[in-house]
Length: 232
Length: 232
DNA sequence: CGGCTACTTGAGTATTCTCAAATTGTGTGG
DNA sequence: CCACACAATTTGAGAATACTCAAGTAGCCG
Image (cartoon, rainbow over all chains, first blue to last red; front, side, top):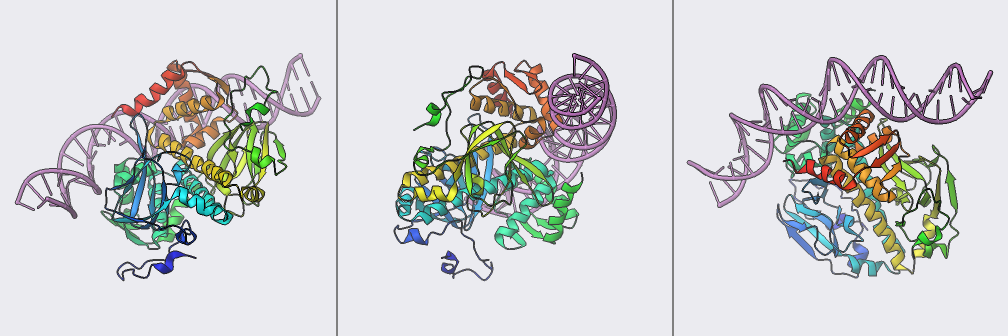
């Protein structure tokens, strides 16, 4: 059963679209007490090196996951919003493999991993669903590899906005992440993100004011992204 | 139990290092007849759109997986060699989500997915191991996102070579993939790969002749890659 | 109202891309 | 076994994108 029904307190100001949940937690809820955890912008959900013991399902807010290499390089590997899973990258490790930081006020549901596995025993569909959820992370990452490998900076930013709009279910939204986070994720510099947004606005495809974004014509934007690739 | 023991016919010319298997197939072998499949360079293991029904464990050879977008952009999302799993990105889908092509003469073991799930029922450790294998794919992808997002072209190529050498367990090897495949994977142009290899050779870090590569000093190479990142 | 951080903008530079051509290696047929 | 066609790789030169550094602006928090 989808959890969207549980979400009956949404505010009129922000019409909540139907949420697609990465994982159906109801079967687990029957056996486990799912703790909630609230975070403020800047708080860490977990850090690389801490004992891995739980996955998290985002109920509200936005988080980023960051990978830090031994020599100090840093990479934002993804953003997660309502309905998405966190921590799957660390399954099979003893400690978390990256940092996850809230970018806005956030609430997550804790899914104690080993307890989950216990519930899965005797219910193959559950574990299989978990495996599928992890696999979909792989596909998501491959999708971004495609974007980063084949699109110029301005089109990457456009693809990012389109993706964000699709997740929000809205063409107008406020980016909780800063330019630097978007830049890291898209493998460009933060000034380049700024200029890309300005460029998209100049083309009449979007309206930008700081973190407030509005897609003026999402379809035209998508066509423009794909057109650039066709020029060969 | 590790399958490396089964590999007792290796040729003297190519000393086979201890193979780390992405998945322990012995428990499955007890219940399933694991078919083998041989491919020649250029053959497809599977194509996007074909019914998803099996994972594959590479026993010998090398393959690439490619993602093709609706508007014609193409991206190599990874290379897989002995011991590595293929098809995990398609778990949860009805059809495979990308193309996988052999880059050399290759042999894979077929792991019929739904039969595997059957075997996993009643053996939680097995399914949990499969989930962990998928999760490690996520980590691998994040590692490459880090490299692509934070390293200049020449250093990306160096990182690629170091990774390849580590997988082979040798500092001298023949790349089965062409410059274009490496280029797509690393998000640069194929001429850039050529120039990067020439540059690394000029620095005395490697020796290159077509696809024959030799790391003259793997440690120095690694230090050089990480040094470039430290300049900030 | 400071002081701070995030964002924007500009100018010059550097890396990488693009396009073209030359070279090398490979496989095939004579 | 050689000649030839083809594919992959290399190299060069100029152009373009994106980066770097620096300065200025704007919003936010205390």
